[in-house]
Length: 124
Length: 139
Image 1 (cartoon, one colour):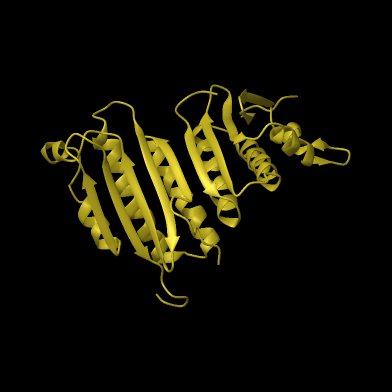
Image 2 (cartoon, one colour):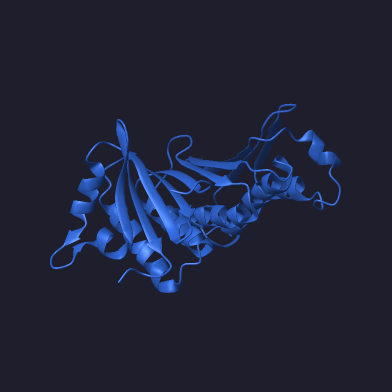
């Protein structure tokens, strides 16, 4: 992930939902995401927050060459895969993988980070 | 009503650039959404915190890179925000010419219920602002 992003840590719950969504929207606008992609980024963020089993949310949010970059964590080993799995919907698959252009897990022992990119132009 | 019950339950680190002030304001709006705050109180919060963040952007790093650190928490009916830089102290700012109207601190003092500025010589500066939330129905 590119450096120079926003690092956010907020208690889980209604405050995190509202703060993260707004901060993602602001940084997404700086990344020049069009409206539909901003909405996708918001849905991806909601899906991550819905399935994050922690008392706080910690993430880095940045504007990259292709669009918006998110890194959620540090997470415990296997937690990123669990978040992706829990976001699966019948016939659609994982909402996170469906809407984001790139999803991967970055490991930094003993932790890991769920990394997501939402590009200005959606993948086919 | 949800509460940020522990110190630094909101912690935001932003690059000290003008566009980061917008991000900080959006974070405040998010807290206000969740707490049910709006109108004058939210406007006061946003103006005062924006001023503190803008001071970091304009003065803390003399054109170089560095962070704005914004933390916030609620205790009872009060919310406290702390804006910190990693710059070299507040004293040189007073000698800076043409970098603003010098209204930032008086404005923060006017809008917040308590303001405290800590700046060690050659060290970081911390602006701590406490706002008392209005009672429901209070103007």
